Image 1 (cartoon, chains in turn yellow, orange):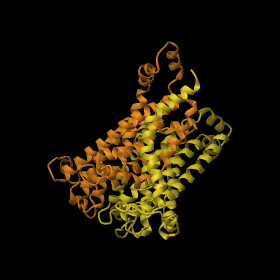
Image 2 (cartoon, each protein chain N blue to C red):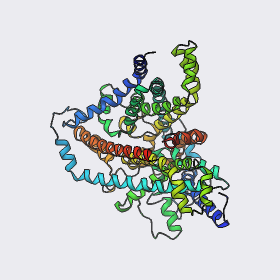
Image 3 (tube, rainbow over the protein chains, first blue to last red):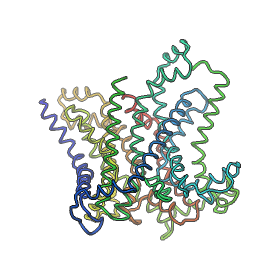
Image 4 (cartoon, rainbow over the protein chains, first blue to last red):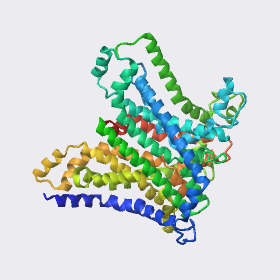
Length: 293
Length: 281
């Protein structure tokens, strides 16, 4: 069968998907670019061309800079904590003990819990008047009086990061565990016979098997964390005093709360560009890692 | 590992206990809140276990008497089912032929990367034109409009999953049938699709969970009982002036039940799905 027909047939089979993707992804993306050069409002005025004004206003504004710092802080700290906790939990689950299968099944639960339910749950736990965290800490004698964990700029972001980590580290743990189970037992045994200590065994025997899957998890989690919206919206709406306002929350406020579609679009594209840079950098890193192993 | 000192074993059990507590404590508390009376929940010091088990909120939320919290909750539950169901069906329908084509045709395999790249796009990059477009076609606050928007997430996702599913079915089977004179539609209908049925079911379930979980677009594009989904209804409860925290917790338990049950039942498929990309690469 000629190759050109096979290629044509493939495109024909992909046609429905392409039509859908152009309608709901391609066209909106192009229209966001167009809007970003206008002063359009969300409802009513179509707006006129104003060049790069939106970009200049957004990039120069302190709101953007602060949201960028908040987002980076959230992404770096929560992803790093998820990686460390995930690997530790995976190393534990890779040991032989009774109840291991049940514990591994439990790890599915936080992952399966809907993001909004997780955010609601932690909002209740952090409640300043009746929350379980305040109750537990005061009853244990660790806290003098009840605190408003989400109501104080000093603790709100940290409280959010804890809630996000709790939901996401089990996923990293499951990915890492699958990788650990691929480490051949005879290599570990040989390293033991050769007298390698636990740290050296981890570094030279286990790590090469872990690195690839962990890197993939790192990429996906960082990109997700950089786009974070749901958990923050439900728990703090970006407050108090905008201390948890990430980039996605800022875009939402600009485009939908203030209905400034034009400047909202320009901000959304800046965020998209940042995510793309992250993704491309990571892809290069992945390719390098794949080449090395 | 063979060499295990008693100290090491004790350390492992301690760690396992700690991990179990970390995972279970918040979930258990969500459940306890849902069955505690309002008085128990506002007691100081807090009652960690209710004196009397109170199931009234489950009855209240699942009742369909008009103009109650229950009617609103049931309506949002049905909306979530409709939106997630329609979006999943549509996504699988467009993804199956595309995924098969990408899996079997080397010359177009690059297009999969373009599809995956769109999956990385932040939703805010599409939200404004989608809002204007839905408004133009009168599809704001409609389950159809929201299901259409969910294709932005579900279509690339299911294509990606199904493509790796088709990859695992040997193409030699298809070649053999072709040599025997079978037409392409016969091969797909009688051979490939039945073999891929488990993968298609798994992909559909994951897509459904993704739609069930979605919040951002639902928040933007729905406004009342006609289309509001469960995630938005729960966020409203959590952010509103509801003084009964037990009611919020109950709504959370009910919304979490379907995905948690699916997650537990599908563990094996889930873990292999999570790791297939990672372990191979």
